[in-house]
Image (cartoon, rainbow, N blue to C red; front, side):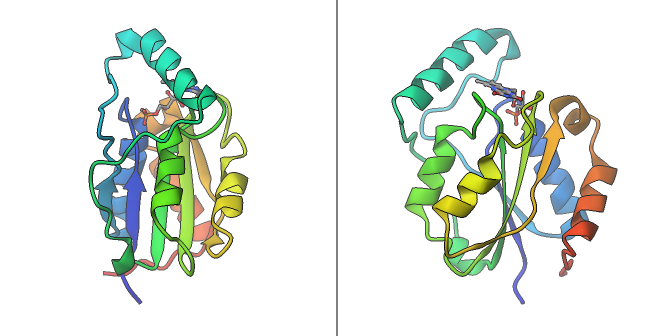
Amino acid sequence: MKKGLILYFSVYGTAKLVAEEIARQTNAELMEIEPVVPYDSDRNHYNSLARLAKREHDTDMRPQIKNRLPLEDYDTIFIGYPMWWYTFPMIIYTLFEAYDFSGKTIIPFNTHMGSGDGGTYKTIKELCPGANVLKGLPIEMSDAEGGAENAIKNWLENINYQVLT
Ligand SMILES: Cc1cc2nc3c(=O)[nH]c(=O)nc-3n(C[C@H](O)[C@H](O)[C@H](O)COP(=O)(O)O)c2cc1C
């Protein structure tokens, strides 16, 4: 069996912290989903990011991904993102349209401030009917900033994730 891959998209760094902790516990490869046009990560500019994200959502945009993601080399792929306007950022739609996840195991996780996974794990199942989508892990932003080590450990045990070296 091949090693797992952790893909994540993160602007304020909390989904990244979760991704890094998953990598630490699983030995899976870590890879950021990088947008062609970077988002403003200054939390003082939240309102303008919120407006941009809303516009992207309402116009059904597909922000482009800058880097090539070597999915063909992996069978098991964690996918992490923040909750934006009650769903995932539109770049995650770009990901699912640009890459074929058929035959792969997808393990979603996300950060949020109260919306949980916002129904996105179900959306992933709908967008990737040929993939096996395992139970995801929603983590509150403040918990993510605290490391979320135990929540991640319990979740990985719960989904029976096999750590490969
Ligand atoms: C544009 C925007 C929209 C957001 N919408 C939601 C939301 O609908 N529900 C929610 O629980 N949190 C929402 N949040 C909070 C983020 O999900 C939370 O801050 C998350 O930890 C950010 O992840 P990141 O640090 O990886 O970028 C939103 C944040 C931003 C910037």
